[in-house]
Length: 551
Image (tube, rainbow, N blue to C red; front, top):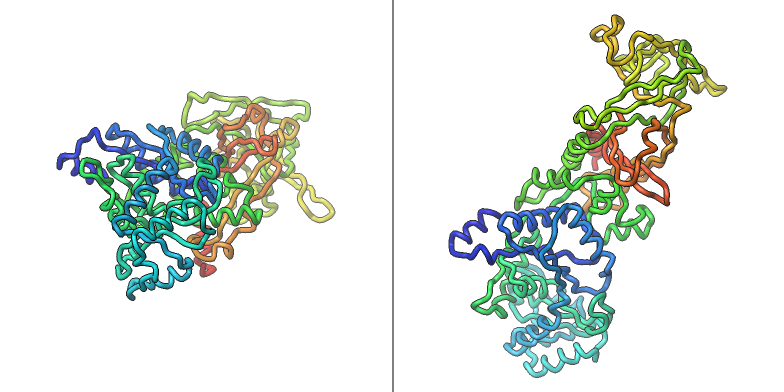
């Protein structure tokens, strides 16, 4: 992209006339794929000190809402970008209508009374010549009269359209007399009931770039085949002293185990598989933000994958690596037990509470330290204990020693089971000389191989946690996405945290030690901790499972 722009400047294009735009459609929330286009336009704007216009291509009143406009603005600002001007395709409806009349007058557009399915059939395919419409050779005056009647609401929806008269034999299907206007008797979110005909996206998009004098129109790769059509429209309209937008394409961002299709997301919402466009399992920007993904990490990810023209699927683990990398620097550590089992230190006083020191973030000393209560009765994770030690199991088992994080070395001596043979208590002893931070004779190289997190039961704070797994079990979800929906993509549990969690507020990030990174958010008027990402990458396990199941 930069090479093309630099070459244009070298060939005489005035640098002060460089102009970019970001043109989302306001019919849904932005997703991770939009970040690539957003990042590209706004960062190039910064580099060349050029304006970047935020233009909403609102050509279809069906599904367009102000709430989507506001969400898009919020997402752009989340990444620290600011636009120089806000515009709407609907601002130019009158101008586009006048240009359509111009095309009719030069015999390059006509009103077609055929239904949509017949128009599609007549277009044929790239290997066959198309069939001309019976209405293609109507007189200019007849087309002008009919188009005026379309505008004035004389005809019903789907009864006729305005088409460009280009080439029904073109190998590019976009050039086979594309539709420019259709009748939609729907209220528009901005123009209200002023119009009952609406321009198609293809007629509007390139011409809006021309109106706004965009110098470099950066589009995703699916627009490459539309470039000849946009250029044809510009050929009919452009004035010699005006800048003609140069369209440059780049590959879309496709992420594994995800969907970005607005239609598919709407299906998931309607079927109550997800709650909304902001569901943390989605890769909408709002969903990622609710889950605790940071703007810095996402931009680092976009920068790493780069801008190419080759379509591929980027593995989600790469995004998670960048999230984990950033959160590791900014997240204070806390100890939280998700699946507790009671641990009793038999030789520790039941009337004594000891406050042990713990670093808030070893990556950054500026985070300081905190005090954590240690007592006779603790919670540890159930999966950190086995009654009988297995090979390569270095956590707690009968006769085995481990260190408790920031505290002492303990040794498991016995267990208590209920009537169903389920372990309900682990009885241990501790070494009072082994407090964390001190060198002790008992802690020889290789002897203590595991450190466990824990919380004091009487000081613990119950917290609500939402754990997330991929929404889809298949890496590529473009086809049959309904078949691969993960029924266990969310798990809501009550966990137990150290008392410092009381200070948590919405927007805070934490590392729950040995578990993952979590984000505090409001959910049904309660503070909930969304799991942002695991301590280690787990997506590869899912990928391997998918391969083994022949997905």
